[in-house]
Length: 455
Image (cartoon, rainbow, N blue to C red; front, side):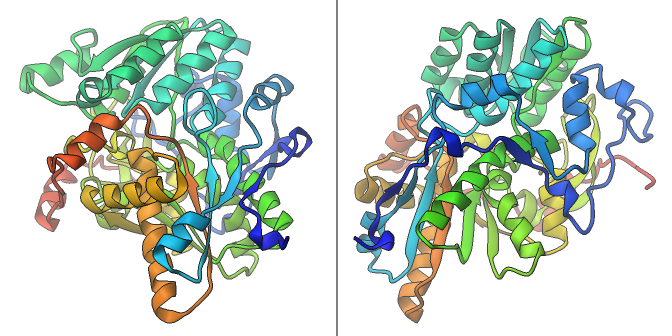
């Protein structure tokens, strides 16, 4: 059998990376520094320690290329890593394309998504620093699920502020988090000053990741035994996720393959970073490869946002970052890809996009669910709505290959399964899904309150 006829590549435990890759070591232009929302000056380590442990703060700024994975974290990774790499032969046949399509499947762990790759080290470092409880936000629930499991393992309490529209749409995600002992609160809530303020202005507010972040940060900042944990955006989170791309590289090497283009859905940027950053390293060294983040038209951060300093949360309590943003006041429509409903973008991904090293495209949710069904029928896995954005882009690229006769190698990150998202599929079947697009004028309105930061 030819190596290129192989359907699945599974590495051994010995092949699980022992180090994370830190792209800050190789970027031609580093991300701009964080600013304090309290002083409008560059944030100090001491200020960040109010909500983060010192080891994660160090990872946020270091330019060391390789960071050792602690043994206790690596031992936890062994439960599901290395994750499999599949050749999507069924999808290729359905499309009639000469392209070879591969996907890295991150849905094989208990939570069903890539988020566990960073929740485990975050819980580990917080436990080591003496923290008793972690507060966080979650959109669709993948991150909250991952942190609840990690906190349970390390003996930490866990409080999750879940975006209210997703709290209603995804009840079984709530049940999953509660199974592992998490306290799950619909956001905005009346338990924080931020939540109360939002509800006074809009009692029917459906919530946003920006609002939920504000509540979680406020919770952490007002309790000495509590820190804040973020499931995307920050540098250390993106770095933890590079275990995905590092494994994918090894798996493709087994097949003597190398991708021409990589796709991953892009909300805050962590799973796109995870699959793409180890290949960005190659591109910076002259390799010809395209790296494309795929976002929803309902929250087009890269494709319609501005590259500027902005607050990471609605209440303006967390650090200020230079990133592509739709404005911290932006509240996206309640689409089913809840994990992609964030107004900002990873500062690293933003800088790479600004420097034209990576690309971005946006899709409406109808064509995304259409792609999800095509993938489900041909590959036997029901994908998460977020991951289905990457599938849509991969399908469109494969169809272009069919038209041109090119035989490209396409890789995408299947960042999670959709078995907790069947209500979204029901809405697609009953034709209740609506595509949302924002005009340039509405984007101008949402970014009018950006902070005045003097670089």
